[in-house]
Amino acid sequence: MTTTELLTLPDTANNHDHKYHQLVFGLEGNTEFDIQGRGANVGLGKGCLVPSATEHAFCGMGENRIVVINIETSQLNSTTLQTQVSSLFDKASYFSLDSQRQVLLQAICQEIKQTPANSPLLQACGNTLLLSMQNLMSEPTPRRHHTHIDLAALDLYIQLNMHRKISIAELAASVFLSPSHFHSCFKEKTGITPHQYALRKRLERGKEKLAAGWTILQTAEHCGFSSQSAFTHAFRDHFNITPARCQKTIIEY
Image (cartoon, rainbow, N blue to C red; front, side, top):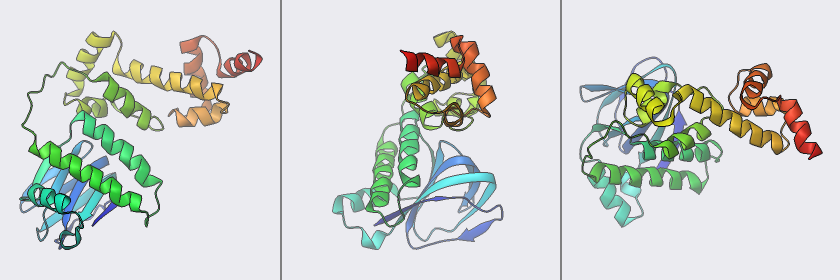
């Protein structure tokens, strides 16, 4: 049996162990973990595996959010799952997610946020992440070509996080590049900066929402703009028409 939660850790250090395995993913902000004397920062794209009865310490650093999956080893009802979990938690470890699994994590977190605590869907979400991690840990380490940028994965990441500010460092981390290297590689590949690309995606989505009948304010908030005025200014610069005029043209058409 698994339980899945979104948690914010306090900024005071805590130390304990428990009788179940624990899989932790960084989601927002940063947290510090120390597992048997090995410390690491668990932020976006990072995580850790904590076997049962393993002492560990943890502490939040400002605003943070993590995904925690608890696995009751004595109550697993799937022989296949139990075998895979036992292998996964042979020892405590830290890990980094590839871009595809970061996108999977974001998508599943959207489900978790909207799912009641007693819903069986939460267990299904946890099991999906658990089995995906088993595949990741059993794969041979690939050679990473740092000039490769997965635009499809970036597009989905932007879409899932469009309601908030997305830093260039976040996008760079999803393809295992430093921000400066990512910036130069991205511009070479697309001809525009990552910031311009993300802004274009927000505005294209905004135009779709206006066509669907959303108000300008609703659209601005959904697309991550600080105000209706900021959205209107950016929209006019990009499309050479105001959001209000765009809506009116659509209605007239």
